[in-house]
Image (cartoon, rainbow, N blue to C red; front, side):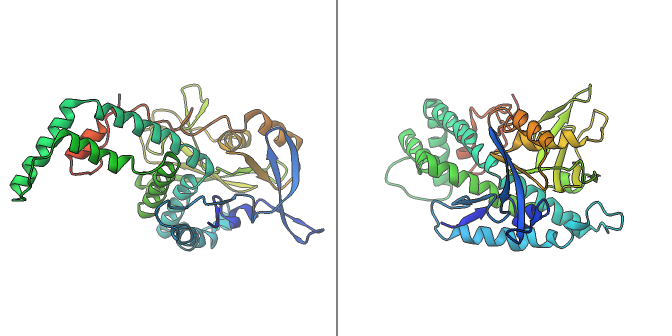
Length: 343
């Protein structure tokens, strides 16, 4: 296994200060129940062994780390320092690159990885419902038998409901719980690398700015979302396709991307405050927040809000959809994904 970066070193370095004693860049690290630490290296701040590991391919982690660096980080590194500069030239190519960069930064975080447990819980419940539903097992068996006859495939005996149950277990329960979570997580990473979030790409992109004395911080889960209610209160979480969703990513102590994906909007958009951005960074943090300065105010904010928005627990849950019949529908649909209905 290798050390994989959940937040690119280049981005963290933009929040670092120069330490004359070590003659290198260092970050101020803020964490729950601990005093601010001044010597965190950007190189190791969000580096975790095995984060992009594939349970069935030992060489995959190095390939994923390299692909993320070359295809998604490097293009943005060429111009990210210009965000917030009035002279910055906004091209379609740069917007595509930023869209992919933001999407992958969300997916690759430790918080998103931890949220995979929630997805696996949903899958286990769906599997249990399918295996206990004799009617669905028989229907799938009948459908598979008819398909074989139509294709002229000769079998010595017809497919039974027991065969269907065993095939479902082989497909959906072939790994240990821990490996299944990691495999599911890597499916999300690869989908993120292969697809462009069209609603984000077509959305309204803005840059919030501040002054060095009131800086933005960045967490180890730096892409955050919220939806405002009618009173203007920001409620953390919500997928990129939800109505009124806002996406934020600090890119330096004085600049933060504020993205309004092209979704239904029923609330007036309010420009975020520095504190709102920093509170969201702390809330979504898996463990740490980072900044360029030692600040009692930032530390107090982090201590109050850190890790209060937990993916799969109280934000980004998927219980709003009905997965009771998802295994049945996938098997009836030739193994292809079927979007579950909202409850």
